[in-house]
Length: 76
Image 1 (cartoon, rainbow, N blue to C red):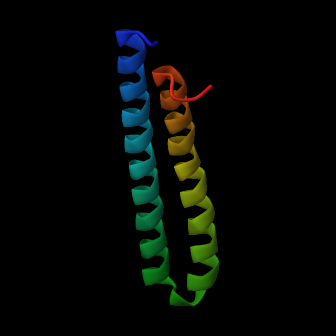
Image 2: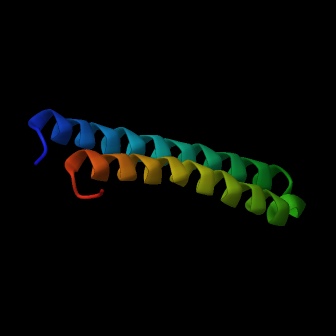
């Protein structure tokens, strides 16, 4: 049984995690589009770095999700 404050903490954790990941992926996409528009020949290499940055940003959201699941008692 979880307390009300644990439920609130779970909501805050996943909320900030999702916002942070969204901002991070948005900034990475902006950088990719700017660099490719200036130098189209580096599109392949820039996209590889974009995927790495997006994956790392999304990992933070997954960590926030795991913390929220633990706080809400749905995960051991």
